[in-house]
Length: 302
Ligand code: AMP
Image (cartoon, rainbow, N blue to C red; front, side, top):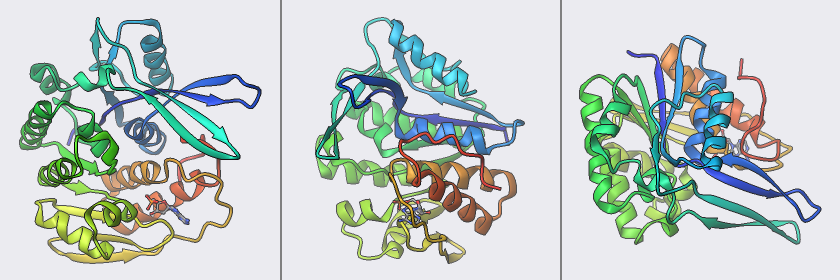
C-alpha cells in the first residue's frame, strides 16, 4: 500500500473575532482539519496531501503556504484563474457563536470538474479521505465523476474512508443528501459517521442502525462515533463497541469528529489494531475538545 494519505474537500478562510472589533484570519474545513491531525499522528514515512481547487490570487497563495507550513503536500491542488477560496466569519452574540458563509462560488466547487486532473491527483494515494461536505459543494453532475474516480482508485489498490458529516443546508435537498451519501458509502472501505447527525437526518434510532444501514449500502466497515457514548465498529465479521474515557473540561467540541477520524486512521493504517485505533481517536478528540478552535497543537496520542 502506498504511504500517502490524501484528504479531499474544501479549505476555507476563517475570520474569527479577536474581541476588539477586529478579526484574525485562519484556514479551516472538516477535511483540512483531518489532514492536519493526520500529519501530526502518522509517522514521517507517510505523506499527507490535500486535494482541492483554489484561485491564483493572494489569499489562495496564503492558504497553500499554510498547508505547506503544516507539512501537508499541495502539489495536486487545482489552480483556477477565475475563482478564489470560500470564506466564513464567526460572529459572537451573548457568548454564542454563529457563522456567516461566502462559499457559493468558491474554487473548491470545481475540484471534480476536470476528471483527468482528479484521476491524476488520486493516483498513488494509499488512503483517500473525504466527507459529505466534499460531496455537497460539488455540482450534482460532478458528484458522479467524483465517485467514479474513487471506484477506479480503489480498483487500483487505494483504501477509501468517508465521514458523512451531514449538513442539509449545503445540499439542494435533504433527499439528495441522503441518496448521494448512501451511494458514496458503497464506494468505501470505511464510513465514519457521528450518530447525532444520523439520528437527525436519517432518523436512525440507535448507532447500530446507522452501522447496519451503511454496511447494507456496501461499506466494508463502519465506525459510529457518539459523543461521550460508546464507539461502535461493525463489519461483515461482526460488531464491537468501545467506551471513550470521560472528558470533564469540555471547552469547544469543534473538530471532535475530524480529529477522531485522523487519529483512528493513522493508528489503523499503521497497526490494523481496531481497539487501539478507537483509543487513539478518542484520546485525541478528548484533548481537542478541551481547547478552543479546530486546530489544537497537541502531541499525537501515545
Ligand atoms: P462526535 O462526532 O461528537 O460523536 O464525537 C467524536 C468523538 O469525540 C467521540 O467518539 C469521542 O471520542 C469524542 N467526544 C466527543 N464529545 C465527547 C464528550 N462529551 N466526552 C468524551 N468524548 C467526547
